Length: 186
Image (cartoon, rainbow, N blue to C red):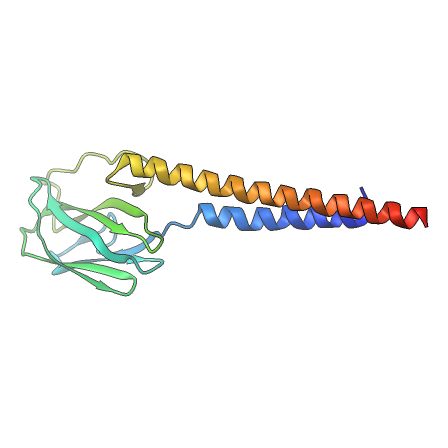
């Protein structure tokens, strides 16, 4: 392979390495909340707010704030840029609460998660069972078939892009070889 061919190959591999991972990691993320995960506060808040790294879609979102008896205190959901909030009804102090949320991220995927906070002295309060998994955010969908379809579509797109890149590389190398042979013959 000629020096130009190797340079072209290196550029192509570099571009693929930079571009493809960004496609795979495009889901939005929860970056902050009030109250914070695991926090202990003195009085029950009047609202819970969630901040995301991108503006979620105002579609199919939900935030529930429940006690250990599964009573929901959330009332009204609002969107303000990257922040989604819910107003809360008054709740008893000295209890543990769990925030369960679900939003549609800016890329159209449903993301969800849960976190706990405590109000007052919770030494006698019941705890929530541990959440499954290591992170509090999961990418989910209401339709498992759609999730499978989405993954298959993404795989197909990556395969087609890879095939075009390989074809372009093959064409560039073939052209370089033809050009090199023509120069050597003259």
